[in-house]
Image (cartoon, rainbow, N blue to C red; front, side):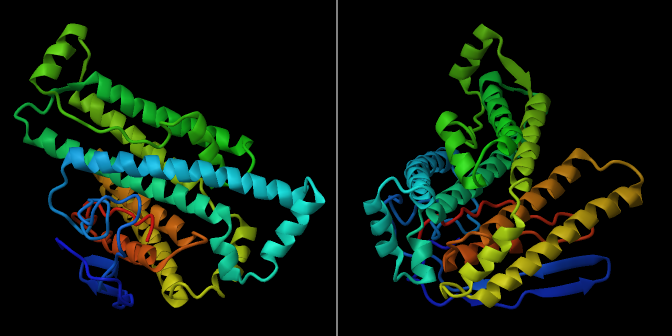
Length: 371
């Protein structure tokens, strides 16, 4: 763990390589050297913030209270930003499509006349809306992943593997899954792009994509739960959490880039010069190949054993795919910066495609939403 990080320097990246050793295949292992974060911003209280770049690197201990306190703070900040940028995006669209007055048309033309492509990106509220959406998706995935691994660790440490869990917490996780599933089902009938649709839905349902915190029963809670007989088995609770992870996978999977957006993204990214475009292309290529490798791993294990995979194996592969799909979505952002590009590289290095055994590092690596 690094306690502090120096001021940002040039992004130094070692080559992404392919190593083949006997029965093991490790693809796209990556190593990044150098500093990552810039100074604190209005939404970070200190450099020791567990969501800041200085403390997010493979920290061995993650205190639940601290993690979820900061998670809630950042989600709240991004909610306010998202609501503001949604309003600005819709207002700008109405001016472009049907200006309400001649003065509005003149002001809009003059304000955009001499802008460079890079300036257009930074002055486009949709880009900030997209950044807020992607940041919330990444933060939510890290929080859900941490919850799941934390629950498995605590469950394994208990003498009774079938110990009960609080039903109130289980209901919150069910609500998380239901709201996310409803969002996926309703999206085809909504107008606009995914960040706009998500922002509107979250205004109507503030708990959408908001992961609850898993907590064990303490003595006082146990007495309260006994009064209402509201406990469920840990096995049932585990199934609820796994359903939530599968639904999040569907949510991420249906966020696809339209063909015309691919073309637009190419011409918008090329001239701005804010990131290493060669590295961006390389990371996209590695991401695509790793996804293929993980899917092949699932098929080959099923074929070799001639049976369904164990739930634990299936979840490990599923979570690795979510890691890669989340990175893929970040790489598509219109306003991608160097620190976020660095995060993508480091996040992908945590997924190592190995034939047998553990291949995914589940240590949280929180997304640098702002820099």
